[in-house]
Image (cartoon, rainbow over the protein chains, first blue to last red):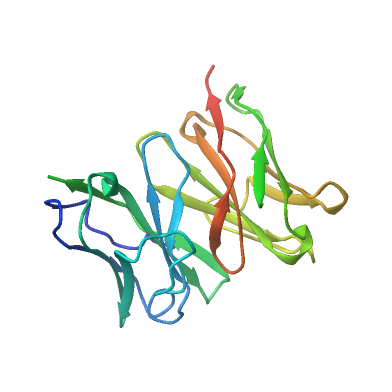
Length: 111
Length: 117
């Protein structure tokens, strides 16, 4: 199972919006609504930011939103803040074998 | 509140095995799956496998299929991940995470496993 494809880096200035893409196949991202997004700061465990494509766990700011079109999911961070600078990983269920796959990760820099 | 507490740092020699534990509290252990995810230094998150804590059935990533065993002890609300035939490339932080079909919002603190001769 190959990793989902994410851009290695993304950036934006405070207050701006940035969108990170996550491309898979019909067997994972395109076939199921089990796409999640995780934020990870250095030395910390991943934190769930979006689940089931568009849902936000309690406590996650509504500046974070998720969407999906075909085999590509996206995470949008609006009103960028310094604390949003982190690595972001997408994840998807893989229905053909009941597995899970992660993306390669995107380093978000707040300029 | 939900907590997943993992066992401590391990240092192993090449060829050895390591067994990491993940003790759950704050929820009904058998109602969720436990996923295992690892992260080598400077690398991406990598899914290893999961166990249905209720039924005990497992699924493993093809990459680790031959070397990983995930088990659970329902009486202790604890899941275990054992990785055998360790090589230096297995040096990583290993995480457990509560979830359903995918890992969810509750993760352990991570266990550093270092493989070195």
